[in-house]
Length: 406
Image (cartoon, rainbow, N blue to C red; front, top):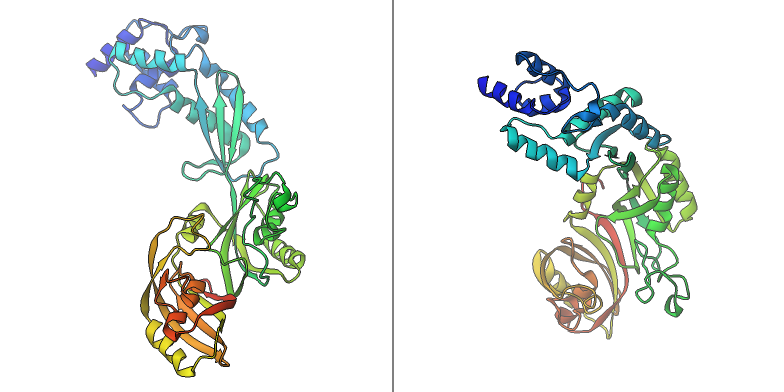
């Protein structure tokens, strides 16, 4: 105790408000504000000077704590019209003030301190709690107020909104996400006929903008559990996805209406179901998922194939590992790596001598087209090699995603 009084005595050689005095001993006791703590410390030291009558004369804060109410009012006004459930406050404090505070700690030998930023965050947060009628949230706040105390400015960091669903895609001429032109990067050029993109629409275009409009957001991003090829349909239980809406003004959405609107506007090209609210953690889970996929693939052989050869395919591939180098068709934009995957099951659904339809369940990330034709030997083993006749893929459908939501 005597050591703390010595520190207080040295500190009070300079004019200090109770906030800045109390902050020197912030970790000593709980349940008190620094203002209260400073008052107690001051009264415990005989002959200690009173706080400066003009708080702007405080050596550390220069009267900054007189402006708490002003900062809270500016912050509350800045977020008018935005729907959010909770918030957090951060502050930007003049560097000269922070340096003065840290030098002062060293000068008086204080080691149980709290920074002025931390106290400002807390005290402004308390005032905002009363004004907004909302709770502070430290982990995943809907809104973060960044208060610039030097210039009386508020920067709002509005947390994104996340909406989950599953989609089916019935077109063989549409990508999952917007595909910007590689030549002009969206500006418009002869290659893309001035459109700035390689395809007129996408699953993202048929879902994201509708959700964004209901949330009154500024931009939308699409996160899918993998993606199918442009010329592949997505059928069966649908592919999980999350639409992320940046800077939404609304967070309470009419999800059944959104689902109905997406399906009506997509006109049978895309269909969604299971629309519900989501979060950032689920986005990470979807992006990192390794669930197996089931495919239906129709191939045509260059010459007639004996049915017995197809039995050889099933025997050689079912439950077996395969090795795949990055396919020739995508190696220009992806690293040329060797991947090891397992064909969990394969069966022949139909066969007429030249054409066969296979149903294949394989590990996530398996290149199914290359499993069929071999990709000039870059996938081993492969159907064409086992049969002994080259083949081409005519149609590919994803008919099942092996997650629990199916």
